Image (cartoon, rainbow, N blue to C red):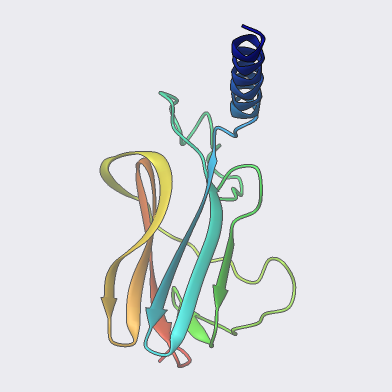
Length: 149
């Protein structure tokens, strides 16, 4: 009987530890995406906020204010070679944390509950990077290996 009791107490302790660690799990999960475009590696590291029924752009992400597309930590994007990002030349290793700002025009798409970065088009030395959250999609063209023409 003592062995069964010790086993039961051990199982409860393990179960309680698992339950406690589950409570510490972030609501916005870590994500990353990588894509090779010609000889350039593109890597994006971010945390993925979830819509959870909220109206996103306007109340949650105010219009006219800068917004880091991610949750908890800053989103990073890295290029292994120089690229044209949007229509602006961007060196592979720019100095400073805020290397580039470009205007983008949002488009509507199907609802995406959790923020996602993805590459819907990759062709030769160019690609399109999309940020998609809720029904908002931002698409940015990338050209690898050369300055803008």
